Length: 113
Image 1 (cartoon, one colour):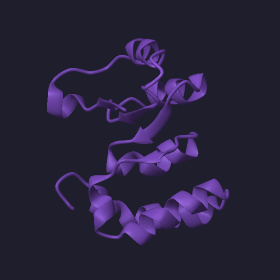
Image 2: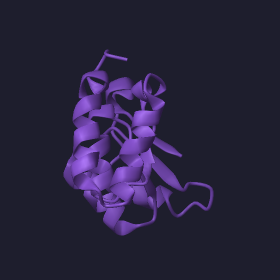
Image 3: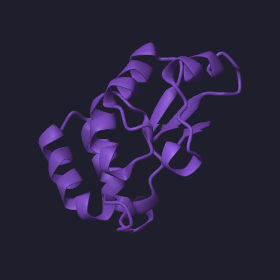
Image 4: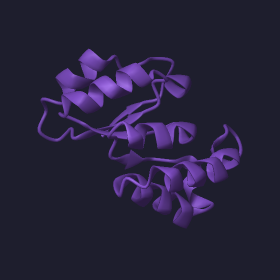
């Protein structure tokens, strides 16, 4: 699993680099905290990596774009609601998913967990 967390590391994994690394048989996914929804969508569209939201506030957007899931700091607080969000998106119940995401938004803000 690649971890693209530039706020913690000071360096961003560029999409081209991530896709080159995806050629390694043991690299199957990326925790995406890069901050660019365009890059997130490009990684998802490419299909070589499972893309997991790393910024808790972007879970809904990433799932709706086709992301696999999330590695979320705040999910330990209301785990069942994060699972419900994932299921609602997977089942294309976007009104329910949006409502759940809005309910979780205060927990998804940086430092809120």
